[in-house]
Length: 325
Image (cartoon, rainbow, N blue to C red; front, side):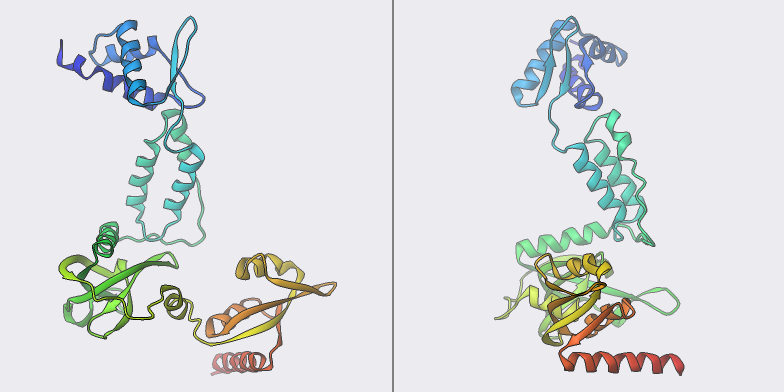
């Protein structure tokens, strides 16, 4: 038997995989013609035997038997709609470079037929989204995840951008030793949270700013008592470190979607007048909260408590004063 014929079943599988889906079949004649085009001899009996062997192995190849038997993959690992969402996520992600995005999308397209892969050429527009130019960030992310799973420390150098937009290593190329506990996704970037040996405290580092992190053969420092990723992330990323209040916000009716997006569908609301409603929400009186209010330029008004109203007014006066200087 020619060497090529020993691999015949693989070529049969590959042809059906690439050329069929829920709407497209291939016939036995199609398969035989393809095999002959690459120098493999076949007939209806051998092709039928190959497909039977593939289905017995577990591949869900559906057969439609009529004058010309035809076949298709009945079920794929990913539905086309799921692949479309994954492609959109890759295109929208800032930390994946344009070149890497293209390669990932090509790999995702290989998970469906040639007929449907064209639908994965998405024209997603992400407003002002800047793609990262640095390659290899995915390897840093993978290293940190492996360190977390193995409960091992990592070492890395860390860089920053100078006013001249040049990348420079911090502290003259110092190597940081760090005990990673958790990964956190914020503002389209990966952060690792853990124990920083030099500061003897919980700390965070942005993974794409690390230079070739490496796992070292040292167990992580145990998590300090009271370590809470949720609380830490609120304090560090959202700056929700202000005093907590229950506030009443008078909002224009058109902002109901905004309030629900911010505080959830169970937010307490009531009518104020024909053009406004009042939302009662729990907040931390922090720069983040007041900055969010500023966005709406008076379309959201704080009704209570007095402390929050006064602090918001003072911040507004400082902003006005700074613009006049």
